[in-house]
Image (cartoon, rainbow, N blue to C red; front, side, top):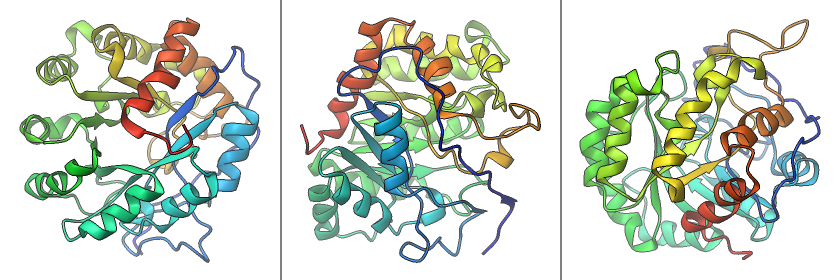
Amino acid sequence: MAIVEPYVKQDSNPHSLLFQMPEGAIDAHMHVIGPFDRFPLSPKSQYQPFPSTWEEQKEVLCEKLGFWGFVVVQATCHGTDNRVVLDALEHMEGRAAGVASVTEDVTTDELARMHAAGVRGARFAFLPHIASETTPPEVIQRVAAKIQPLGWHTDLYFLPQDFHLMEPLILSLPTPVIIDHMGRPDVSVPVEKNEYFQKLLNLGARRRDIYWKLTSPDRYTRSARPEDWPIAIPFAHELIKQFPGNVISGTDRPRPNMNTVVVTGRGDPPNKMPNDGDIANHWIWPVAHKDPAQLHRILVENPRKLYHFRGM
């Protein structure tokens, strides 16, 4: 296993909310990792995380922060072994949906079994620091053709340098598309001058079933400190303005591989892991303009368009 960087342990004590979490709120982007004796890491994993089991995630996200449910996105460290996702969905009893990682060899029977368990999409990552291999666009097109009859979406996580590959792919896919983490724009360049982000906006105008994850301020700012995150909020606000019915959000808990992402830690001594309460209070809430109606749309209404929870 090629381990590049040690992982940073997630915080199990989120700060108290400064707002009222809406009833039925969905954390639309989080991960379940391990336990490793049951769900080992992929031999190709580029990082060595701490486990973050479904029990821990339920306790922190649902019992402490007040989310009704969540979307378990297959973490790259588990490769295409989706058992960890399916196990979490089984235990959450309809209050979780899943996004799997599959190859073009996946069978229709396997897809049907995952669909029955609550999986609603397939994810592909184009980041060398977390994925040792990337999937060619033509393979993604073939996978999308397989998942389209189930009503699934295609989830793409990419960086600006891959936009030339992603644009024609996104326009050609037969499924709805999610763009992870707002497409990871360089937030140091303002929205109106950000050529790459303007291309993303244009892409969204050309295809109205593109959805956007307004997640992970720590990734754009490379900081675990909430006082550094406001620079990224105008990008989320522009997406809300232009595509109000297509924006979702979440915590990204447990935010794998922080050592390759975050430079500025919070506290003394500095901790590279953001606090989940800070993510809610100083990212999700201000992204929603601190407006309960807007927050309801982002956390309650929009996720259900994509994920069709079995518990609803």
